[in-house]
Image (cartoon, rainbow, N blue to C red):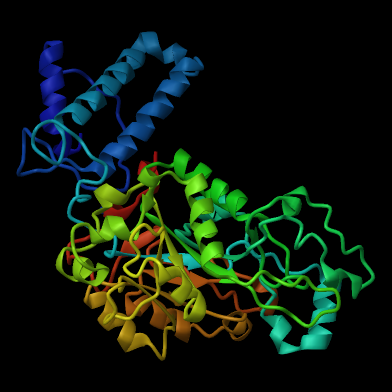
Amino acid sequence: MPPGLKCSVGRVARVAGGPLPLPALPRLPFPGPLRGKCSAQPESRAALGTLAWWVLVSEFALAVIRKGMVSSSCGRRGLCGAYVVFGLLLLGVLAGCGDDGEGSWSAYPRDRELRLNHFQVIGTHNSYHIEPRPELMDYLLRRLGSLAEGFQYSHVPLAEQFERQGVRQIELDVFADPQGGLFAHRAGLALIRQNPDAGIPELEQPGFKVLHVQDIDFESTCWTLVQCLTEVKRWSDANPRHMPLMILLEAKDEWIPVAGSAVPIPIGEAELDALDEEIRSVFPSERLITPDDVRRDRATLRDAVQNVGWPTLADTRGKVMFCLDNGGAVRAAYLAQHPLLRGRVMFVSAGPDEDVAAFWKLNDSIADFDTIRDAVARGFVVRTRADADTVEARSGSTERRDHALASGAQWVSTDYPVPDTRWGHGYVAKIPGGMPARCNPVSAPADCQPGDIEHPLFLR
């Protein structure tokens, strides 16, 4: 029996009237990042990783018993009763082991110490994006050359990115469409003699639409912002103990010179107010991490971040924060009636000398390397990119990715959370160690472990 479990096992065995036989269990690997505490033996804190494996073994054993697969040995060796008692012993461990010495137990015992800026994760760029259909892609490559090469990547649906690829930050491009139907006619398809009318009901509905470039690079795994966010919320609801997610939104209004192309609605204060409203229509306030939540009673975000710190993981698990990708006129419009982001949903990209400084978008992980490390060390959170425009996937170069990971940027965005093998290099961007997150190499406490931030066994 693992020594860290002796205190509670002994306690339950005494209640039962004496030592009880346990079936022999295989020696299983110990997931080091998972550590709990045992109140009866504080000098030897119980190993939550070992406990997790024991839970899995017991669940399997009970399933086998229910199916009658060991009925022949139950009477001869008393294994059925032993496995049932084993399950009770595990309950005793849960009752007697915790992080506060008072009998409570936590999968994340450091949640009140670790903060939102103490992790690093992989995000995806244009997370909704699907490469144009082959006939249109061939046409665009002939007409636009290397510019169209940047369209040659695809992502799986958002929930699948969270579930299978360990992605914890996504990016969505949004176009205003308050009346509905503005992007239901895709003019680029007429160029290749295909029907330009989408026939997609979601595109006829009022509200923000999610796509990359209207009329030519429009394929998406989710067509509306509400649809995309609902998919995120559904995954979050099913995995309520996930680390905080970040969603980066870019509000677009550029026109393109294609005959019959849709003319986007300019993004101004009214459109940005509507954008906040759509976010809130999906996520209630208690599921959001907003600038007001971070500022608290301080005068500015910068003051709060540097002198109070970001909210802890205990206060942000199961929640989502939104950041605005845009600078320039769109950023100015978002701040116009809310100069300190009071009442706003999204953070804006801001340098460390601004009152609204908290989040900073610094996409060039090589040129901005020292700036990113300095910003992270000072308490700010940063998004950077591991690759762009399919360049790294085509060349196999990992320089930008490696700089991004070493920089300490909390969110490292990629088009390749899994390899695209068509160019023969197998380029991919992942968090080292195989977990969804790792402790931030610049800002996290020295004894932080990846499992303190998020572990697949403890999402629900």
